[in-house]
Length: 101
Figure 1 (cartoon, rainbow, N blue to C red):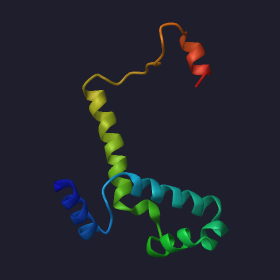
Figure 2: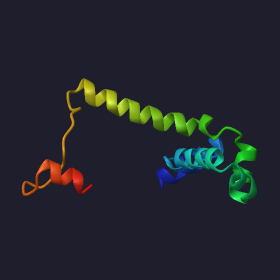
Figure 3: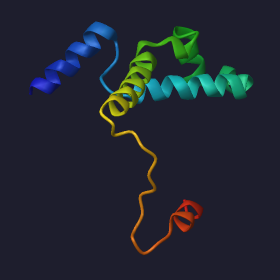
Figure 4: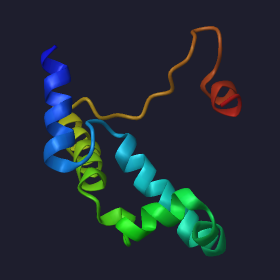
């Protein structure tokens, strides 16, 4: 119940819900606007979104997600948990695992 109240409060205060979906939506709209401007201008969803958000990458959710990614990276580096590792079964070599990505 409390989470529902927090979600309603988030919609009331910021006009958006909680989560990373808003940041990914802004990123996708920015990519479509850059790659195919005519498609963005002629599709109702993109046209409506770009009318109310002229620069989708300046949304606060985008900066929030960038902060989460950078903060996680810095935290891992400070704690000594940042390293390159190939996750695999003991029955397969690193080279084979990378090829099978």
